[in-house]
Length: 325
Image (cartoon, rainbow, N blue to C red; front, side):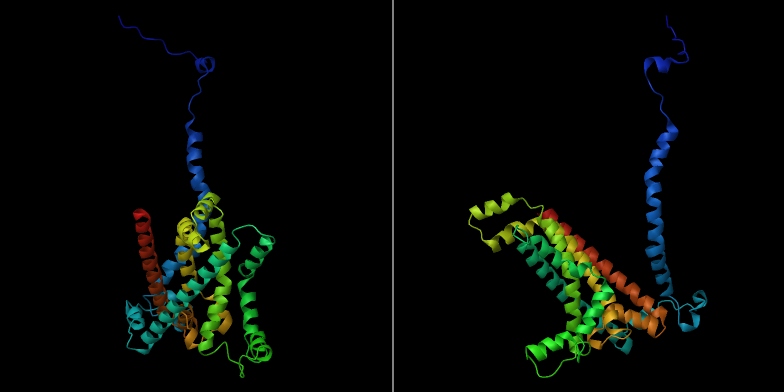
């Protein structure tokens, strides 16, 4: 005989101690993370995504000074702007190619010098000594200073007639008889490199110092017992432990340096010397000096595609090395 239990009376949950599930509160908890992320998503859209999409659209328009007030009325150019900037047998294409190779050389030199200086400084300050905190603070001063203030100070120091650099080299050390020009000609490229390295290497030093702090001291002790010196300890202990840090650091430094605009613009104004014509300044001149925003947007899109391709290849290679290791 089958018996059916009667329905529970009211208040049974209270007597047995069971608590009913409250669905509305659970839904609120599910939406809370998305609600907290909403301001960041909106800011990202307004600052990066939407301007980037507009820039891509502008690259397909004949947008000149005549259509700045109402750029949506500019006639369509199709891929004409891309054809114009990629004609390397013409003046515009040659100028873009020259600017690109100048930027590549600039980036490689700055990246190598910044990482080498930062690595040497991080190794030197890795172990405790008297005054290490003060030394680290002094090393980080260039990174803490405002960019415009520091670069303007460098521009005054590099003046030909009354700059401090020429005063030391010519008047104090007597290394040369004539006062060189540092902000024009071939010297402008090397002056730009010096200032960029001076600005960037403290960030690399900070990242490498943070990475070295997580390396166990027992590994260095074991290397010392095996007879390894300073160089071998760096080769077999420090660098392998900093692999992940260096992977991110080199990529960030590459992107920052290749896109550098503040330093050359503060140094040279609207027109940089041919020897220091970085790609960012070249795009600026074609966009805001000649008022050809369509061409400048096409150059910006090509630069974006190049950086995305380099980043993708770099991440694939580093990931493959990690898998093999």
